[in-house]
Amino acid sequence: MRIPMMITAAAVLTTFFGAVHAQVKDYPNRAIRFIVPFPAGGATDVVTRIVAQKLNDQYKRQVALVDNRGGAGGVVGSEIAARAAADGYTLIMGTTGTHAINVSLYAKPSYDPVKDFVAVTPAALLPNMLVAHPSVPVKGVRDLIALARAQPGQLSYASSGNFLYLSGALFTSMAKIQMLHVPFKGGAQAMPAIVSGEVALSFATIVSSLPQVQLGRLRGLAVTSSKRFPSAQEFPTVAESGLPGYEAVAWYGVFAPAGTPPEIIRQLNADIVGVINSDDVRALLLKQGAESYALSSEAFTKVVQRDVAKWAKVVKASGAKSN
Image 1 (cartoon, one colour):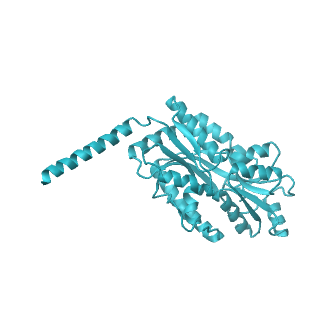
Image 2 (cartoon, helix red, strand yellow):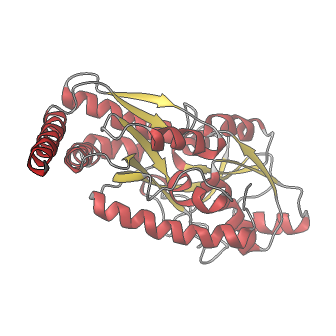
């Protein structure tokens, strides 16, 4: 009795692994859904569409289709991606917010950024820019800190997404000031609010804020990286212009649902890294305030694990825990 059962089991396994091999060999043979966990028009959307378009150019057909699923600081789209079939046909452009911060920000997180996903590769590294509406009487970080101390709780600042919020929370904590936080669903909603003067300040990505600064609609005060950013050299860092030790830099990266075949992950990594490291994509991202940033799947996994621990400390210190 045991021999026939063993033969049957072997046949089933052979069929299964044969199907998986065929699936991997033909990949991709249909459209890949590329989830953006934020509304269209924001920085995550911009970076995703650059990568998706270049993948389509590389395959010489429409392979990657962008699907915006914004809501709850990236939680909605991340949940959809985490529960999707692990076949390589659903990817998500995760961020430091969705895949390093949310797990500690929410009391009962609905997904685990490490256990529920496979890290494919980062795509871009983005510092933020601290910007002010032209009507705000400040020219730099020192001016801002002095004004906030003179008017505690009266200055408002916008954010879109948990990383940008915590960038502001870290700033107010280190500067020992109080400002009114005004959250927005996404960058496409936050930017018009700061440009119109509805809010006084914003911690926004360079991708979305630098064009507004260049048009004179906003005043750039500083960048949040530890060194000046290549495409915005005229703007000092927060650390050098009034708040030593401050740094808040985000990455955007590609993830697949846990259980996606390793062969597909390797192919995705090779294809996407090739896109990200291409001269035209490097130039395009830099022009919009982002740096190309590509790693192996294994190296990116370590970055995610490191940042989960790093931002957990910031969340705890800020008292920003959500229900």
